[in-house]
Image (cartoon, rainbow, N blue to C red; front, side):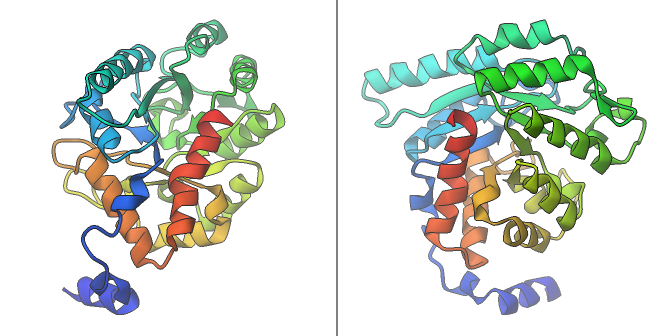
Length: 300
């Protein structure tokens, strides 16, 4: 109870807002980090079609389906076809765009990435996925990985950079030097970077530096919002400190939830939008993070 009373004292807006306060903020929203079935890590509570339809009903713009081990590009194409079919039948009123991506798990073969990049449903490369390949050695980005970054730049495909602690192949190496080397290389080669779960791995000052190198900062429901299956990673106030330090112009939203003991993607996102309102961000600032920056990341 001490946490509850302290939170309400620091953020009195939590007593003032209505239950529907975040509903309008879904309009045009881009969820850059969606987990749903099929998923290689374990059963999720929804498949990607269900998640897409939840967002379509809230008039969101796009979602990106992530898996740590295999491509979600084909799944995205099938899900999009189903969404479009329902739209044509008049069973939904709004089209949400569904995209997939490719994790660098098992291989860093540039040809593998180049083949996927030819698909219009390919909108993300995931670096340092769980069990992902080593991308930086001796303080340098490996040549094959540099080629992948060039492919991403040529096709304007963003790169999500996960903390290296996701992969045991780094042998417990410090997260920040590896990610800083990657982000600096991504910026130098003209590609777009998105930091995955930065508040779980780096200090605020480190995140500010990564953003200064051109990276957008992922403000995700996990780890900002604790749940049962994943232990609390950070004080949610750290997320607010990061937003204030880098500015809303550098922040992008994502759900990153969906296990059976977690909220569904849309419900988690609604909690995050409410939290941003409680913290005192204006609707305009939240739309910048929820819609404008996500669109710039995916389509800019």
